[in-house]
Length: 159
Image 1: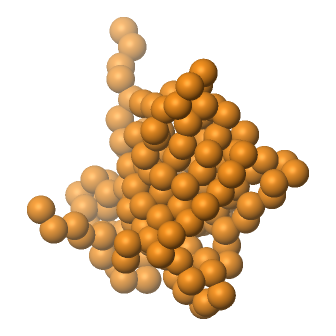
Image 2: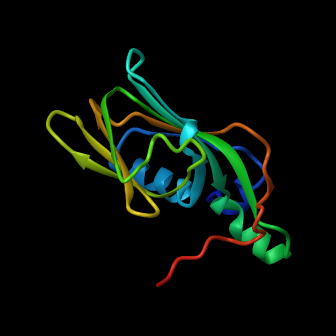
C-alpha cells in the first residue's frame, strides 16, 4: 500500500521545483513568500530571456517540524528563475539604492493569449515587478544548506 508524502519527507532535502501551470505557480509563490533579497541580486538577461532572483527563502516546508521539535526556524538561499521573459518592468523600487533589501510577498499569474501572460511579483512596501512571458516556465531551487533564520522567528502576517 502506498502512502501520501508528508512535510517531514522533504524536511531535510533541498527544493527544486518547476512551474508549468497556474497551480504550480501558487505552490512556488507559497514557498517563496517572505523571501528577502538585496535589490542587487536581481538579474535580467534579455538575450537569454531570463529573469532571476537570489533569495533568502524562509523554509515554510520545515515549519511544522521546527515547531514540533522546538528548534530554530530556518532560511536557505534559493534561485527563483523565470524563463521565456520578453519584458521586465517595476514600480515602487529605487534601483539606484544598491543597499535596498526587498521582501517578496507573492507571485501571481495573469494569463494572456496563447499561453502567454504576465507574472506580478508583489513586494512589501508597495513595490512590484512585472514579467511579460511567452509561457509559464519558473524554477525555484535551493542552492545552499539551510541556516538558522537571523530573527529566529517565523514571519507573521496580520489576519
